[in-house]
Image 1: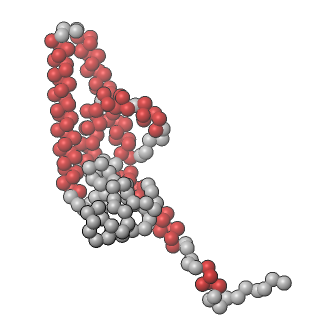
Image 2: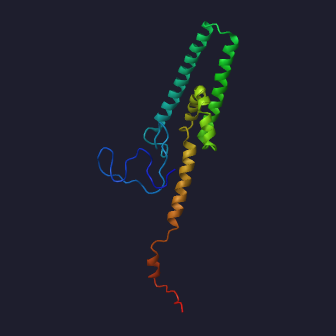
Image 3: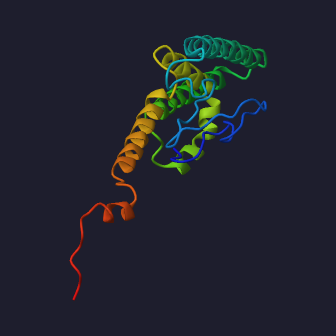
Length: 187
């Protein structure tokens, strides 16, 4: 969460990407964009509801398509006559990896990972269990944009810190000296 810089992909202060009239970026922290939603999650504007519906339908459709692909792969194993043990291992592997990917993706919507190195080491496992990640996106998009709660909490905390920091400033110290209060001279 950047406190004084614009969100990635936003035009710099004083202009627009199309060269139109200048726009001013408000001071303070800027909301972090969410994939497929940008910053529409802040005020639920800009087609937020349609985007949520699109993410839900898209992730469910991708999960169903992935299940069909895995089914064809399993049928290929049966045609190759590799045996039932290998088939059971493949089903168990995809089931366990999907469950882990679902859990890790779901946890990622609520909190930042405590150990990014561990998350990087689980990337391959989450890739194998991609169906679990897709299902987590589907379930989460039924209630909010995936990751919205986490980013809203972070944004509101940063906004409160910024407002508090700005309100505690008393202005120009030189102006306070000229207000009629005189300090005793040191002697």
